[in-house]
Amino acid sequence: MKLLKTILKSIDVAFSIYSKIPMPKFEWASDDMKYHLCFFPWVGAVIAVLEWGLFCLFQGGFVNAVFYALLAFVIPLLVTGGFHVDGFMDTMDALHSYQPREKKLEILKDPHIGAFAVISLLVYALLALAFISEINGKEAVIVVISFFFISRALSGIAVTCFPKAKKDGMLSAASANEDKKIVLICLLLQLAGAVIFMFFASSLKMLYGVSALAAVLLLFVWFYFMSRREFGGVTGDLCGFFVAVAELAALAAVSVCCIFFQA
Image 1 (cartoon, rainbow, N blue to C red):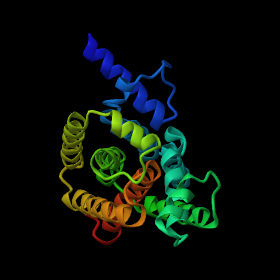
Image 2: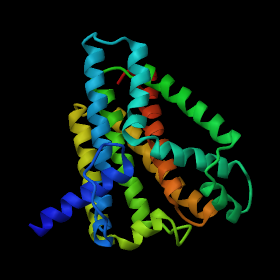
Image 3: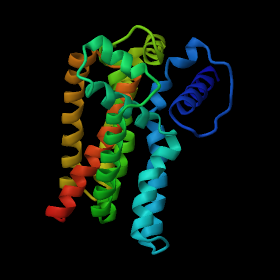
Image 4: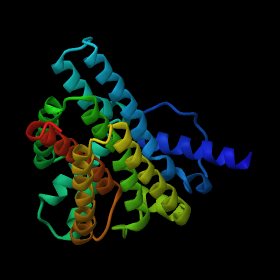
């Protein structure tokens, strides 16, 4: 009974922080933060289910291609409330400031947005819509939507394992309260399960899955070194940046395969 209560509270905390999905309200204790990252990827699973439903409507002829592309782009924003996009914009402002590390960290905390954030978001949106327009076939869609889960599992691993840029803030508090060993094992198992599911659900269309996975794993390695070099470690905004860019990288990889190989 205690285990079930812990799981339900962890789910509630994870979805309350990382999504706009209405959840029961209760006063959080430090113990409630221990395992919430285990359920962070499941916000991505909700997005994936909605994206699949939209694709089925498109395949059935109920919506046109423009409507499909635009709504496919908007669904993650509606579910998360732009949580990760906010991190993406703050990170782009900080990186393009070319200031010392301390100043970059200040920019991450600044609630105002700069020109580079707006420009970067516009480029991101246009690239995403362009790539979505080239995705064809259910196998390609399955691979793409799998990365809503996979990107969050990797982001959770980064929170657990990567050095932190600051000792304060939500990310540091969450990391300090979590049971790192259990959370890491849980995220790794979920990551492996999601990758296996992706390959089998996409009828073993290996080129789609391998290309997207390679792109995102390379991005993950780059993210580790970039965050340490530029910021001294990860922050909540940086992990949100990773989720947003990882989803775009997977989409781009599958789109390129659809264009050039028709795998």
